[in-house]
Image (cartoon, rainbow, N blue to C red; front, side, top):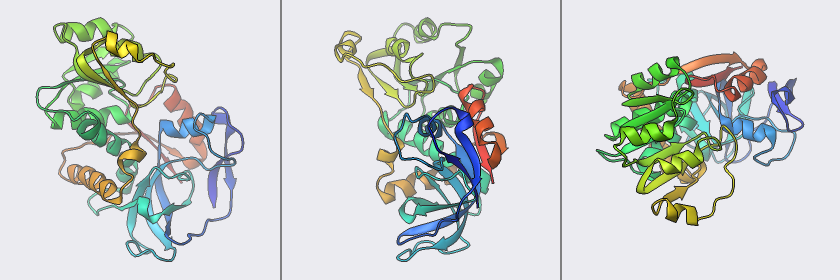
Length: 322
């Protein structure tokens, strides 16, 4: 089968399109014939070695397709079932073997490409807005990269929760997409310093929560945008890792809260995984959650997809199609 392989950590050029043996499912595993694989920043972290793993590796943490084979002791799935998964390596391939406990059924009402596009970022948006900082009616949230794959979904979930959303984006085109997703106010950060603008928009009070998937270039100013006892949710590092922080800074800025969550800790239990995925699929089927696929790349062009994502060009989800 054809797959993307990484033999050394580095830039997009280390993504090699190769023939490798088709994997066989073992006990408790299923093999999925991949119809679409999601492209996410976590894939870049693995490619560069920022997230440690052994080499060689097949990157990719999300896909949807058809169950092709099952190992022993798998009762929930059988060949021919539509299924998807997130947070298991190996999706940049024609076939991938995944622990059955990480796989969710995909209803007939949801297209396979959209299932691949929504699962990782959609479940992330779900836990961020519902559990990490549970948004309530009247809360105000600052969402960075509001027109990216995660951002567009998080804006919609935040609005479902009754929150006011202030989003930051880089271009007028992205600003329009954020508004269409429901953002109440949108700041073009290349033209306007978001920190004083957020303070102006909130009458000097600040926001209840900052959802920051950008990291290095936004983190410090984001802390200054929080109200007293507000929460900084650092959920990514697209611009680089945030330096070590003296906890006294949180005290000085208003007894702030800081958390660095990860999806894996919010879907570790099978029931929680199924509940989050089902909520997304239900919202999609009802037309209450719109998933925007920005671009689809052939699997062989994974390097181009990574360059596009790292260049902050994405306006929604990126997919690889085997």
